[in-house]
Image 1: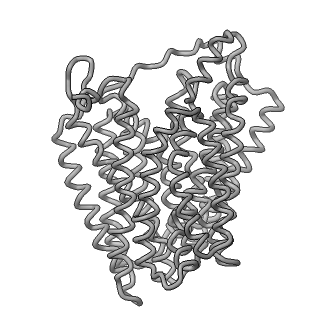
Image 2: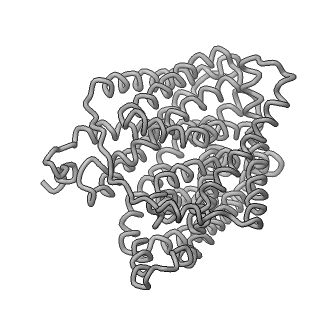
Image 3: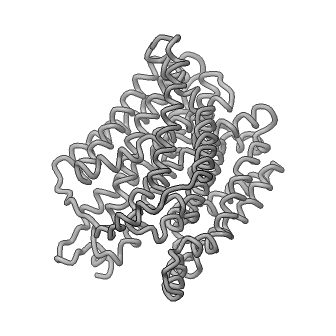
Length: 493
């Protein structure tokens, strides 16, 4: 009786069946993400590429998240939750069937294009499904529904490397090395096609949460950056664009060659895109300065960028690390360890983390978990069995970081919350950068030394968590009463 109430709305409607349908999406993108984390090692063997180049698997995946985060929100706004879900499922089905075709093509660029299309569809689903779960019942039970859905998502992460690895690493070497990719992605394509039909004929109510109050227009006009702040914005945006370009340009080149566009046009087009990205980013920050001046939000984007960088690096090279530090472990066995130990700990950490955060302040829990992972990644750099245990330990303490950083970053943003959420989703492009960089260190030194990347990232996350309360208190409007400030701070736990 208690359980059924969390799916009832104020008008008496029970939306349990709709919720069950939505949780299939969480399972789907969890499975797809789990599959991605075994492809690094596979492509190293099948295509004879190094670890740095294999890291482009994550780059293609997270680049799609970066580019599709805001469009996905606009799609949902224009066509509703159901329309956005149908668009996302269509993209995933198309990417999965293309991936099967890419096996015949046999080039790295063809596989990356398939991953990019699938990730674009997953971005639509993630942008839509998470907030949708909060309106499938009374508002006060929204957190419970999200936790249930995220647990199902964790099951997908567990199944991905186990099921996928049994096919991928069982294929023969040589010309047929990629044959094992056909079956799992064909299965994904068929499953998604069935989901597409089910969602098309199902009644998915287009429910909405209450809109936040609008900020007065005169308040918006007052908040514009000074000349010095504009210079700072320009420098920061230039550094970010340059960093993204360095890691994303190789993906663009592979796709350019795949679709056989004129080679002479590649250089001018990529620089034109870089300039356009700089102008668009600068204009966005300038226009939304009333949002970006909130330090707990802006630094929250940076913290999320660092966290996803650490997570992606560890997930991506878990198989490599197991082979290097576990005597006699094969790639197939390592893939099973990733699912059976790594992602089980990750899912268990999510379940336990929500209970911990309900008892302690969120920023303190985040800081503690980040410090623990700094120590664990340092042990990973030592290698051996101790390093192997430490590496799997990081999965447990990473589990609550994404939602906790997300919640702390958007705290108190009022009418800016929805737009701010899209920007935080975009920040996971950090995964596109960390994997190639970590792979480069592994190629030139060793896989265990590559763990310096997540170590540095966790230090950054820990510093954000430690400073969050001070940052948030300074971001409160001067006119607010001291009692209001205390309420805002207490909401973080």
